[in-house]
Structure formats: structure tokens, C-alpha cells
Image (cartoon, rainbow, N blue to C red; front, top):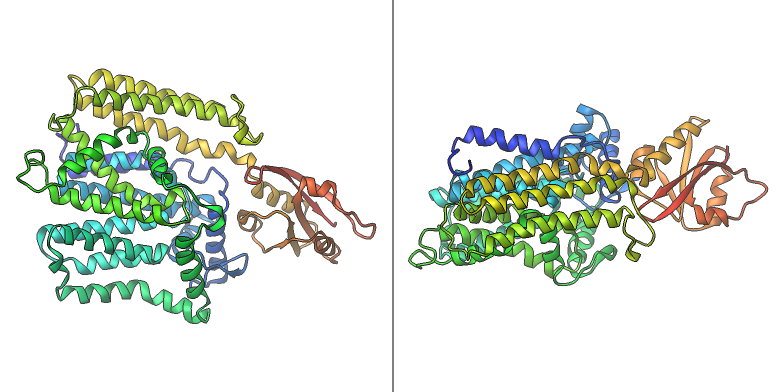
Length: 549
């Protein structure tokens, strides 16, 4: 299937269908995930409401965490589909689909249609990439821009046409999506690659100046604009806090050991991470120049670029002190292309792998299904584990059955791989897609009742007796509460201040932990009326909503 079907239009239809099946169904089903989705969705809503596309705000205060590109796309989606979870996530889903097609084109250009097609399927059906396409944050826009930049670079490199302007335009979008990382790492990868293949001189062309001007034309206007409007506050805080400080120190307790991203890659690339070891070995063998007996049939230059791409992101964020799973998302397209290339070469019987290696890989696919079932049973409370601190999610129990899919697919591929390698690859691809599709569509929504903000906002609306109200929180705050309440939420750190808040002459609502409410100092001159009680899984506690009317 992958080797013989070389029609680009057919490949596009298959990839769009696959990515659409994985990314689009029930996209707005889960309530917003805090903290990132709540922050981003609300920032875009406030920019839309104020008709200010220049200065991002959250809770009506300056937000310096991210540049504006995601907010702009979310505003367009809000205008088309209304303010809600679906519109907030739509830019990520569409960027994910576009990234699949760009990865296909890059894999096709490097190694041929079969590799490009399989690379698109591998990327779409990898757990972390699929999850990120459902998440309202700028990471997918960053990945899409970086893959576009690398595709344009490779087109220019192979044709010697120096695509400086197109590469720079894509990097400009990457900087608007996430900041300096969208320029620094892709540029470092290109420079390292050109040095490795002895063609660093290609940078010193007149087109480099045009590329720099193109980059500035895309990225500079908004940064200048927001810098002027905020008197430099946005630029200073964004650069210092969310770039330098995140690299030098572990912010918000997001740290991890040196092997953190190795574990993330094993889980995030699953079920295709079962082939990570032979893929890595094949890539290492293939970076040798033509003339080496082991790599004479492989284009070593392409592998050198992919290895630079993968290693630069992996090493940079391993060194960084702040660690989050999505930080290495930009290396997933490179991993997908290398995985696809290895599997296509294996299908063609050109990898010289030991007879025991692929059965072991299929066994790892089976193991991933077993581990998935075990993990779901633990999280759902079927098996008790102290690390969960008593918090379980019984609604997830039904999803354990999905683990049967990689078990069955791994067994079938194992059975086929001896005489029918092409069919084994088709089975693996179908297994990955069928495994993730129901989870992507319904798994997240199963946890809605464990996330309090949307239900608290609905309870506020039901209990609202006056046109103008105020909302406050004591010892509790989630960003999505601002989005769902569609008004400013005041946070208190002192019970006395919360009591004074309840004394205001207008209707106010206060949200606080149930344990705090039980020992809250009730004053006879203040009216307290219980409205609602909800479970918050982020803080692993119940929260209470009260009002003074």
C-alpha cells in the first residue's frame, strides 16, 4: 500500500481523512484544561471583546506569557463559531492537519512517496502530537511553522535555489507563535547541518539579506507595536521571565531529571515508539557518506538534517531547567520521518535487521496495550495506588478496552511480518489510528465533572439576582473560571479580605475550598448563602460557591 500508491492527491485525501478523524470529532467536548487552555482562550476572548489585537490581557491584566499569533486565530474562530471550547482549539487542530501534509511533503522530497505517506500517518497517530492538536496553546502553530521552514529550506537546498525568503517568512510566524525559540533553534539546526555537510558557504548569499528583511516584516511589527503600547513592559517580562528564566530555572515546579524527555518520547510517540531503537540505529548508520558499504543505498545528507533537527531540540530542552512534555513537540515530525523511512526500508528487506528485532518491536506494541489497560485501571480506581493520593476517575474504566486494539494489532502484525511485510505495516497504521480515534474523541470529555470552573460559572448564572455582580476566590483560582464567567475574578489570600468582599452592597460570589468554608469565620453582619459544591481534580479537593444575596 505505502510503496505502490504514489499519487499525491490520493495521499492528501488519506492523510486529511486520518488527521481529521483523529483531531476534529468532539473537539469542543472537554471543558478547558487549566492552566494553559484557560489562560489562552480567555486572553483571546478579552482581545476580541476590547477590539484590541495588539496587547494580550488575561483577567483584564497584561499577559506576557505568549505572543499574539494564537490569539489572532482564536479570535477569527470565535467570530465564525462563537466563543467556546471548539473555537479555542480549532487553530491547533487545523495547524495539526497542515503539519501532517507538510511532513508528508518533506518526507516525500527526502525519500519518496511511501516514506512521506507513512510519516504523515505516524505523526498523526502519535499520542502527544494527537493530544496537542486538541489543545488550545501555541505549540502546534510553532511546529507547523518550523516544519514549513524546513520544507522550504530543503527544497532550496536540493535545488540550489536558496529559498531564504520563504524560510524566513515561516520562521517569522514561528516567532509570532512562541517567541525567540521559533528563530534560534531552527536557525541553529540549519547552520549545524550546513557545517556538517561542508556547505556553510551557502548562507553567504545576497538572498540572506532579503530573508532577514522578510523575517522582520513578519515578526517585528507586532513586537514593536506591543512594546510601544506597554512602554516595554511586555517585551522585558516576556524575554526575561518566559525565556531566560524558564531556561535557567525550573518555573512553577516544572522540573525533571536528565532522562525526562526520553520518557516523554517513549510515551508521546507511542505506539510508534516501539520502533524507536531500530529507527535510531538505522539513522545513525545512514548519516555516513555515500561509499560506506552500510549506507550506500540511503541519502545520507537527508539523515544528517533529520538527526540535527531531532538532536537540537532534544538536547536544548534537556539542558533547560523548566521541562514540560510539549516543549519537544517540534522534533516529532523528524522522528516520524525517520521512523517511516526505517519501516519502509524494512518492508523492502533492505535494513539487514536481526531476525529477532522486529518480533521484539511488535511485542512492544503489544506491551503498550497491556500498559495502557493497567494505567487506566489504576487511574480509574480499579487498582489502588498511593501515588494518586486517593483521587480516582471511575469514568475512565470503560476506556481500558481500547488497550485491546494495540494488543490485537501487534499480534496480527507479528504473524504477518515474516511473509507479508507490507500488510504488517498497514495493520500497524490502522492499529495506531483505531486505537487513538475513540480516545481523542471522547476520553477527555469523560473528566468534565472533575473540573469545577464551567459548572461553577453556570451556577453563578443561575443564582444571579442582580445585573452587575462580582466574583472572588479565596485560596482557589483556575484561569478557565474567568473564561466561563466572562468577567474579572478577584483572588484573595486573606479570609478577612474575603469577608469584606461579601459585605459589598451588590451581589457577589465567592469560591473557596470546602475545607476552608467549614472553618470560615462567619460574621453576623454578613449574609452567606450556599450555592454549589464541585470537585476540582487539579487541586484534588471540593470547592464551594457562596453568595451574599
